[in-house]
Amino acid sequence: MAYKITDSCVACGSCIDECPVGCISEGDIYVIDADQCVSCGTCAAACPNEAIVGD
Ligand code: SF4
View 1 (tube, helix red, strand yellow):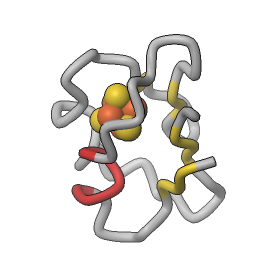
View 2 (tube, rainbow, N blue to C red):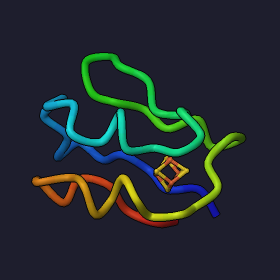
View 3 (tube, protein in one colour):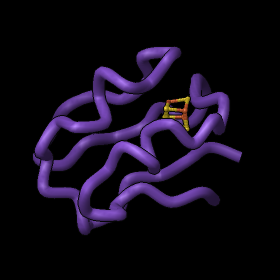
View 4 (cartoon, rainbow, N blue to C red):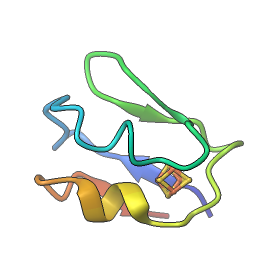
């Protein structure tokens, strides 16, 4: 199951360089490509806002 970035995201950028497969992209809030996510949880641990959740 892919991880997901919720509305709590403030687009601070803390997660984007942490993803080992580079599947987080920038927008108004950040978005995870569910097809590429390997559900490692690295981004969730890096988020200061607890905005990234597992499905
Ligand atoms: Fe990337 Fe892992 Fe977060 Fe999925 S769970 S978006 S693979 S850092």
